[in-house]
Length: 277
Length: 306
Image 1 (tube, chains in turn red, green):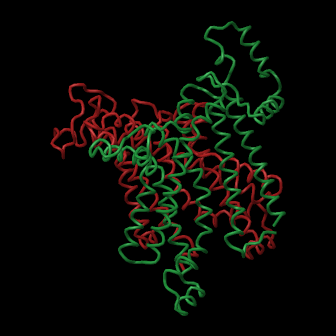
Image 2: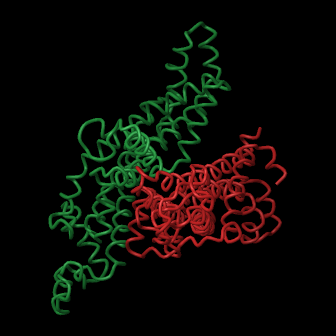
């Protein structure tokens, strides 16, 4: 944690994410407005800064709903989905990568070919094909996102296992009679943690993009739920008379993606011993 | 060298077989009863059963997969539910629009990305470098569907300089291709910068400079050539990003290509078309990456595969 201070990039990224997460988590405290309730008398109000009513900081949308409320409640959905997907992808990827690296042979061949096959598809195409088949419930979306993300972890962990296994300290532990399970849990896994952390934070950005992209196309979170991608899709029909509708959610997505990318890049510089030298 | 080529060919073939299995599993095994989708609503159960048997859907899975593979090999991807014509023809008709868009985006990516990378590396630590890095970070953070909409807002709605949808003439290509190219351009710029910086520290570059070569020749002839390999690899991988990005970009700009087609096909549950697009795009990706791998030794004679 103290090391985080040495990378302004990681720090800035972490702070951005923290602010967005706190705002989303504290949504009910930050606004009393209902993100779902239409109010047709107050449609398309401009944000306060553009001369709109002071009750609506970011204005209202085409159904008169408070955009600020939708934004922070939408953040809950987008961030939760992306976060769960990263955790699930990392978990599955680590297990599969460990299995491939430790067991080797057929298992390894199979897993690596599977990874090749999956990487041959554009992520979004594979995701929409799966969504078409298994539906757009939040659980299905997390599963689809995780499915799109496990390969990175599996490849990294596998490569790490193969190098770390050859190192002297692992040989020494083996010589002292440590079991294979103990070797993995105590000596190999902790050393793959740093790259997993780096991949995880960069991937959080990808997941937010993918979720909002799917929702934008109508294949993710369904209206009237306020996912950022849904808000963006709704706003694009009002570009000529209410441009803020599409602008605001896009800025939120960009901010989160920027934060996660900065954090990921910063962490990589901090944790990668080759770069630190 | 020859055995390397053979091994890569073999790996690519295995990957493509895997691709066909995956597509088969996603679209044939999971979504229930295709016969019900083909027949008008309320068709009698006996007709559904009859069609299922006719389509081979009552055979064991591996037999079905064999049938599927044989028809795909013949170029028969089934009938599009939506267009009532062969799925392959429906997809191929949309292909030129997507190829045009991705080629222009790819060109933009390479030219702009590599140029920004070179300038940033050569002028390391200056305002140029800083501006390039900021641009690259932004390019990787702006979602392309939002960037597209913002470009429409600025250049289409507000300034009225460029058309925002449609497919006639170069003006229509500007906004979609810039939108599509933003992310890979940023990536290529960062990578070119870092891989060029690494090489500029090498002895042979110092030698080149010491013997009085013009800086331009040192950079373009000696350094850039060796910085090309990581960049080329990433460009190969970006083909996937471009094809995927086309799905969203084409939807934003109503561009009549494969990306928009696949989105529409999903909404109509037109699985034969979805399947065709999945297989086609994966095949293109695998073959182009194979090509990239085979290009390495041409670019760098030191690379000799065993």
